[in-house]
Image (cartoon, rainbow, N blue to C red):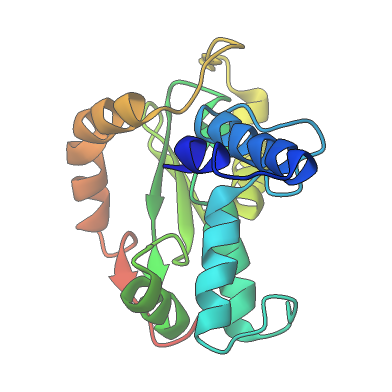
Length: 189
């Protein structure tokens, strides 16, 4: 539709600018954001637009909902954590009131606290976001582990990988959740 619409634009400059915008969006969808792309994170951009339609100013990063939405967008993809070792597994932990509200309003669950696990040695660390939890996890476990198996440099967290990974580790996460330390409702964020 967008490409067909381009042919209807008679002004040469406007048509060229519109064609560039279409090409940039197609590049983003292919996972190849244009150089200097200010919209490199489509999840963040979508959540900011949705927040704005609900009356939340996306620029107000002190607003509790906006703070949580920024963490939600950043933690939507655990690739940076999982790349460190094939034994690392991630899951969700405590789900506070704001995380439940975000899940209900935005249909995204990564506002909950995050758990980083070692499926080989059965260690785990929980934090409000992946980066904090993972930093502590690396310090306490990974940095001195002799069994560490980094993923290949060109490895990517794809949808196909996610599905296989979740299926493989579902029993591990279920067992962990049964301890009461995993996915659980919390009264505070």
